[in-house]
Each structure stands twice: as C-alpha cells, then as structure tokens.
Amino acid sequence: MMKHSIAVLPGDGIGNEVVPAALEVLHTLADLHGGVKFETTSFPWNCDYYLEHGKMMPDDGLSILKDFEAIFLGAIGDPSKVPDHVSLWGLLIKIRREFEQVINVRPAKLMQGIQSPLTSPKDFDLIVVRENSEGEYSEIGGRIFRGDDEIAIQNNIFSRRGVERAMRYAFQLAQKRRNHVTSATKSNGIVYTMPFWDEVFQQVKTEYPDVQTSSYHIDALAAFFVQRPQVFDVIVASNLFGDILTDIGAAIMGSIGVAPAANINLNGKYPSMFEPVHGSAPDICGRGIANPIGQIWTLKMMLDHLGLDELGSVLLDAIEGVTNDGIKTPDVGGKASTQEVVEGIIARLRNMV
Image (cartoon, rainbow, N blue to C red; front, side):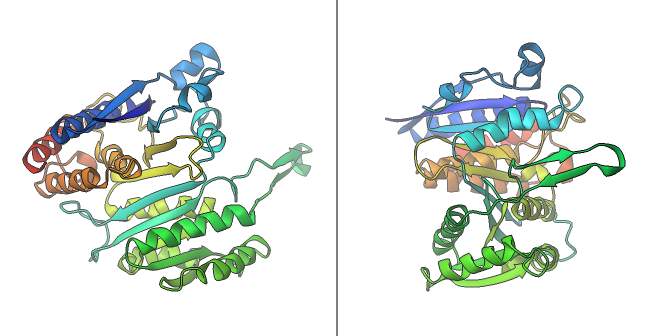
C-alpha cells in the first residue's frame, strides 16, 4: 500500500470546519481506492496559538513540517485577535518563503450547478500561474520621517531565475492542457520590471514552439476575465498581478468559497502547500454554512501533485455532480450545510470509485 504523510494546519475561523470536512472526503477516497493511505498529522498553529505563545508557530515549526510530503492548510487570520500582517507573515508567508514554494497555481472554471455572476458565461476553464517568491511582494523597502514628510518605499524585485521558472511552469502546464499561455504585463506604465518581464517571456516562449501565446496589460486582462474568460488557458503573472487575477477568477465562478490554490516547491527539498483562496470568514464561523468546496477542490490539487491524478479527477467530478444536483451552501445560492455538501460528495464517490 502506498502511504502519504500530510501535515494539516486547519488555522483560524472556518478553516476548523472545512479542513475536517475535506479530510473526511480524503480518507473516504483512500478507503474506496484500497491502494493508498493518507497519514495526517494536525498542528494547532493559528491566531489563538499566537495569543498564548507570542508567535504563530513554534521556533522549530518549519523543521517539524519539512519532512511531510505536503501541507494541507485551511485559512489563516483573525484580525480581531492578531493583525493580519502578523498572522500571515508569521505562518502562511513564512512557510511559502522558507520552503521555496516559488509557484502559486489557481484554477477557475465554470462549475456545473453554480451560477456565475456573468450575464451569459461561456464554458471557461483557466489556470493562473503566479510567481510566488518575489515581485511586488518583496520585503525590501522601508519608511522614513514622520508627519507631512513621511515617505514609504516598497521595492519590487524581479530576478531572471524567478521569472523564468514561473514562465516555464506555465508553458509546461499548457502543454498538458490546450497549448496556450497568456502573459500579464504592464510595460506601458511600469518602466523597468515589466519590460524585463516581457523580454523574458519572449525568450522563454521560443523553447515551446508548439504553444501559442498572447500578452495583455493587466488592466485590460482583468476586464477580459469578466468579458471573455473562455478564451484563456494558462495565464502567467507576477506576484501581485496573479493575486488580483485569481480573485477575479474566483468571483466569476460565483464565490471565493469554491476557489482552490497550490503553493508549489519545484526542487523537492521541501513540501508544497495546498490551501483554498478564501479566508477564515469570522462572520460565518461556527454556523455550519461554510462552503467546503474550495478546501475539497484544493484536496484535488494535492492529489494531482502526489501523482494520484485519477483520484483527483474522480473527486472533481463528484464535486460538480453534487453542485449540479443543487446541494450547495448559501454563498452559491443553496440552502445546504457544510456537512450536507460533504455527505453528498462522499455518497457520489461511493458510487463512482
């Protein structure tokens, strides 16, 4: 039997509701498959942990996590207890940076049974590959002076290595899909980093002559996500642009509650981390209505990463079968509870595997 070790970080808020729900689905899949087992270990690192210990994770937290095959994360953040910049940089971004999770991948598709807010949506199915280690989210900068003369400086860092690996990942992904890569740029307004981005894109695309390409300025591309998302296959973007585009992708699907994400380590030295796009949603925490689909679709991305593509495909089919049957949480127009959606997915899996 093939065994996979998974570190589980439910985190804050609804993470403590949707992560156990997703794990129920995961272990059901393993039982039905018969040839695979998932050994999950949960860690209570969140904002409550910070209030008790003054840190988001123990000093040896990364050492504890590094030997797992993957990290399954719920949601981090509770601004009523801990400022967001403290919670995120103390856990989520710390893991991303220290574990060299240099690529962020977020799909968006028109899901069966979920009404897109677009007036007449076509059948879109796209993936954004986001550079995840540098760009606009660098830690270089500072503030000087105070009062009317105060100055804040934030430096964007674009390395050839970082840009190339994001682009190559996008091209290789497109070769498994519909052979098209779109580059998100803003070289008409950002005079150094974005022309550099464009130059590297032109160079990298010559390595993939079978893949068609296009390039759009980020403002136009954001509009096209709303107007004609069906024309896109794989989009490669910088850290900030990718972040913005993927929230639009979640919105046109009908709810950020259904959107998944993966933070990928490419060199095999550390585990990759899988998390839904949604936050901890303290406004609905404890009500039993949190949408578990984002977390469960994230599970599908983890299965793909572990080489269990067949199980991942079965899981996504089960998710869409349930939404198409109308078993949906209130955020996507339904009346079902979190657990009812999970039970629906498990029932379908039992009929499919």
